[in-house]
Image (cartoon, rainbow, N blue to C red; front, side, top):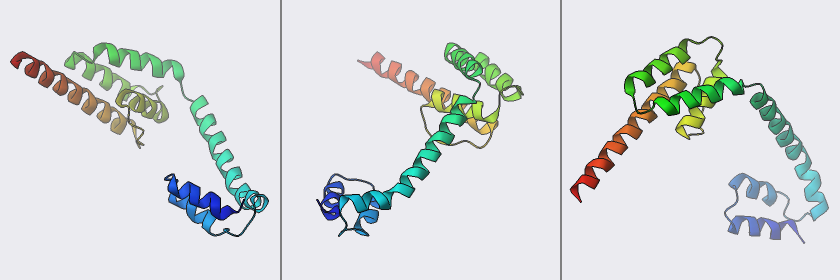
Length: 144
């Protein structure tokens, strides 16, 4: 099977443009030649994944789960929720990476945060949006 056929199948399936472009550069190659072309990229990807696993293992999982539980338990009480956020922002034991992980898990967004205040601000915004949505749905249900 020629690489060109593999590229056509990937392109028709909606694969990433970069991958399709890479394969276009070696259209006339056979499968074994493709393996040689892709080996450096796969090695780089494996190294990146190993780094990510190391980063995740260094997180303070106990602190993250405790803070998430506390946020979930207080999300219906604005004053208490804001107190939890303020306390967590000032907590020096909670590192930026931990705060980012809490924000990702609480908001459900995979976005990157650069600081603890930015991460906790996103959590507050999510809590406000959730409360607003709940209020709207209760108002609508009262109409019908």
